[in-house]
Image 1 (cartoon, rainbow, N blue to C red):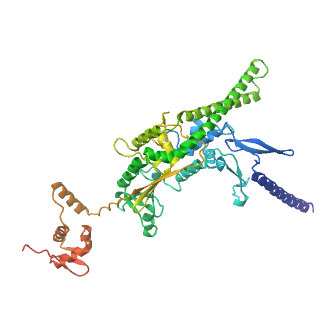
Image 2: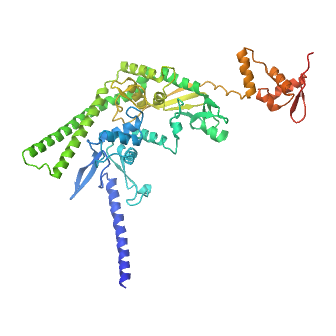
Image 3: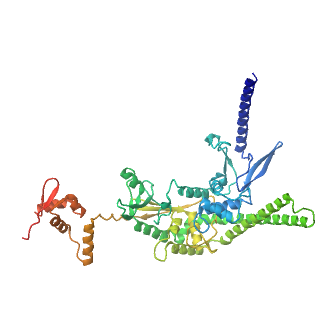
Length: 519
């Protein structure tokens, strides 16, 4: 009887526990809908502040932490354009932060998981998602159970989306390393206008490499997937780069494309100066508190061996050093963020044009792909599209003056992010007339290639189809249709030759050569 009672009581306790959990979660979801913080440690770059009082309860919200949010911006910059060697992956970013002594909220070292979580978290663009998954099980909640909480953003949505696109393009399940590091100038940015599929370098069944951009959808699925598009690689490269040089990197066109960005950049300059002053004040306050603690130790008012005192000193040093580092980065951007005049645009455009080509006449792939983000090849034209913000950063990287190598561009650069408060990104677009592609060379047998090479070296003229057919008939005696097709003789021409008495048609599609003797 007692065992039965214990089981019944356990069932009631379990039921009551689930009811309490249900009501608690409902209250927390409602609290989140009203924009308040439910507790726990806030995301890196934010801090908890008191928002209002409701009775005896203090409602709290989160806001950017001046001591950390600059590090968040740094991480996104590194993922987007890097710090000298191209945009970085999560492992490289973690190493970069650890080498410079930047730590997580808990004072630990950065790892791949922490960096990836930060780069993919929508909280930094102003949308914190509450109740995404269960607490004890890695189970995703249904969309109706998730609450989006509006918080102050640290990163602009355009920059966040660009980082997500970069990370997605590098995913191992989507793109092989050989394509990421492809030698083709426009690899990864040129697409077929009919189906939207990428256009890549193709090879023949025998491994012979043809220098053509070909629609990969048509190559994989045949004409049912796409009608296909094939363009000579050298022609397309030259067309795109030539039009970028002559049309896009022309000062008046640049002023038209970048006008809105430059105006918004000037509007944010004042806010950046106020933030620098706030960081300096925080660094000064931390230094003053450290000085008072040292004086207390000297006067015997505090014991140096006190563990609480040691922890407080370490915390103040961290705050002071982090604030000073943020001030240095902000002042560096401000130093390089001088007013962009028409004369400056002319200089930037000239340096960018020079950066497109190497000394040997070839193109710099990384530089071209910074300017051209997408090129769609149609039947009679190419449409080139790109981001005005990326174009602006590339121009400044080409004409910058602080001596830092930027993001895959082999030219002098600047501190990467000039537009910290940008809320929109304009795009540019221009079209290029496309000439018909040169057809692929006809396949030749080795014997015919050797003969053609011998004639070329001897300076002999190329024989006509008639002469080639007669020579083949003399050599083989009995030949088939495909023997003539291999040297480019069409079927209709064989019929005319028969009528002239040069060849006699026999059964089963074979031709017996009866070349007349001299007459």
